[in-house]
Picture (cartoon, each protein chain N blue to C red):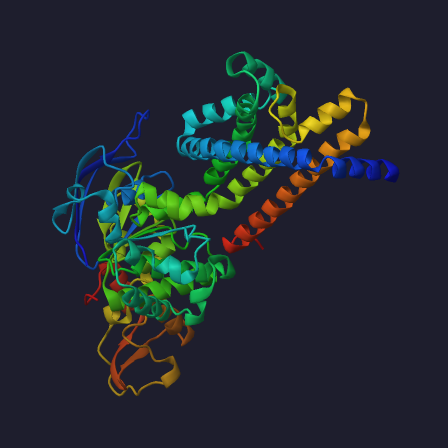
Length: 324
Length: 217
């Protein structure tokens, strides 16, 4: 886990009048999953590449774990930061195991430690260990990106930079890898900076969204807060914040819970909701069941009910009853 | 035709010591030219691939060099280098440089941008990127360049005989002077066979490298 602080970070490429990134400041806490979101050309990828110094800022300061990023040589800094890109960037002439071993080797790990680590990582990204001896071209696109993820995690970096890693994958594979990433993140608690222009992907993954437009940071907040209180019309349009269903999908049944009705049974178990269901699903189920209300069941106990009115109230509040 | 070949063979049998001396000289001068040409073309090609504008200039300059006929190079070099093996070696080296250089340039240039960016982003130094990523991936292309250079050099080394540089070309010039096709064939056939052998051998190496690099189908 690493913290990242940017202070007035700017980048202007030689021969260009306008900065690509324009005095951006933020603070990212250790273990946060931050998604950089914005239209193409907004500077999100440039901002990401300034973190591992693939681009050097024209002005401003970057602190990683409190230390200036320029205090160490760029190559040394990069070996401590996981990096995943869209085209996977796997080395086609190296086997999967050799691809995964690159950073540990650069760091001078012992061979036995590297061997053990390769198996661990293949297990983590749910690829068979038999894949060790294969070449990248023998794997599907989704499998290749799993290797890309394993390779970035190899030396157990506290910080991961991901540049549209799932952008080239079909919708089903992309959704599956998003789930994998969330599952891995729950286990490892990395600080993750993830670039995308896919709004659904951003809402699904982010603890906080960093929204950019024309080089400037427009808003930096949780998905729900951004959707409920977009900073301006640009953010509203970008996220289709007026889309009620999209907002409902970020709220949970727990946010719209009413006390149980007197004499109410468990309902029929199949239609009962749980507190962690999202309100978009809940609303659909309530309507399906006649539009009155549905019981909410947790650990076999009837803990309350959800009604169209309670859902509307939760939507109007626009915040979660309980933090994650 | 067959009779002619038999007569050529008889001439070869009768002049074995001279033939082998010429053949050795031919192989020696070709190898030396190829070696020096590669030693020049390879680093310049890699250097050119790594910088956009200067690189394009270098490529064009060496491309233009290819347009000067080897024979012209031989005669133009004569006032400075005299006659014999040295000017022949210089001319053949100039001939060997462009194919190697262009192949190295193209090989490094064609390395997937995502691959070299990943290498940089993972913390490889410039030298590590060159030795561990760019060169291995460019190797099949580089061997291809050496292969075409080798064929050109072996064929053109016959010209060395014109300025007293020796090689199998001496049979061709002598045969021409004496209007004796037999003697010409004693020079021409081994040169063709040598070029073909080297071509096939290097093609094989190139194929093996591509599949080792995990890139061929």
